[in-house]
Image 1 (spheres, rainbow, N blue to C red):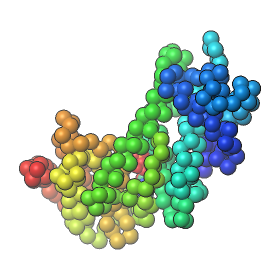
Image 2 (cartoon, rainbow, N blue to C red):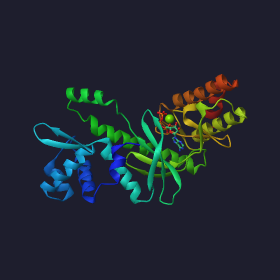
Image 3 (cartoon, rainbow, N blue to C red):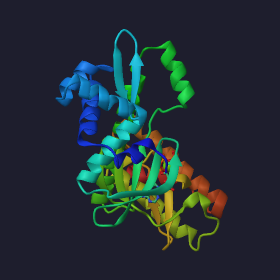
Image 4 (spheres, rainbow, N blue to C red):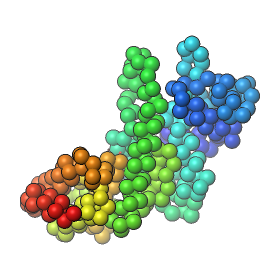
Length: 294
Ligand SMILES: Nc1ncnc2c1ncn2[C@@H]1O[C@H](COP(=O)(O)OP(=O)(O)OP(=O)(O)O)[C@@H](O)[C@H]1O
Ligand SMILES: [Mg+2]
């Protein structure tokens, strides 16, 4: 685990956090925040601000921009530090362990909460293309790309947290959602293996039933659709029960695109069970059963 935001947690002072928060505040209005403004928001002198920025810059938590003024923005690592610190302060995490998985748009770590329970934290990373691509784009467009990456990541975490909470309230087979700050959520650790990595299941029909039941309950009681359901986003626990994860794409069932997403989720699941376990069900029949039950 070598993320600067995590490493920095141990060494950051109260003043460092104040400066990071000051930059975050300034970034609501512009991509880069001037030193004077940072000093004002942090309520410290300009020279203290400069000293602090220098050390934050060394840790890769802020990015310096030199144009017609000198400005700073948070890097994703600076944003990580802020979110992790907030979760730490409210006892949602005490320490972070090794990496559990890297998705297309997130990093997932094992962690311990304040009571020593194992949890996982999912750090959302939306829109972070490779460093080179970002730099290239930046040269061409003095746009708000960076701020929107932090913002999109935050939005993605918030969306995921809210849908998991709703699923929790309906007792659907998903991890418990514990806490959320900025672009990071902490959720229950599911002890098991990603479905796509498993070759043999004792009772695939009953697993398929449970998953279709999840889709049905989410649609009819929760009024939402997962939107990215497949063997990639199901963990099989050691009782061979399927636990559904990865909710940032979920949408409310009354949105125009919801029905297409529902069809796709059903299609993905049935395709997996047909190819891998030789169970064939008619996707249109399932779709009709689920939607007419509304
Ligand atoms: N609650 C959990 N308990 C255990 N492992 C988890 C949990 N949540 C996520 N993981 C692991 O982390 C991986 C990535 O998580 P998730 O699918 O939520 O993120 P993602 O960024 O959307 O990934 P992808 O883009 O690959 O779908 C999962 O495939 C799984 O192995
Ligand atoms: Mg996933």
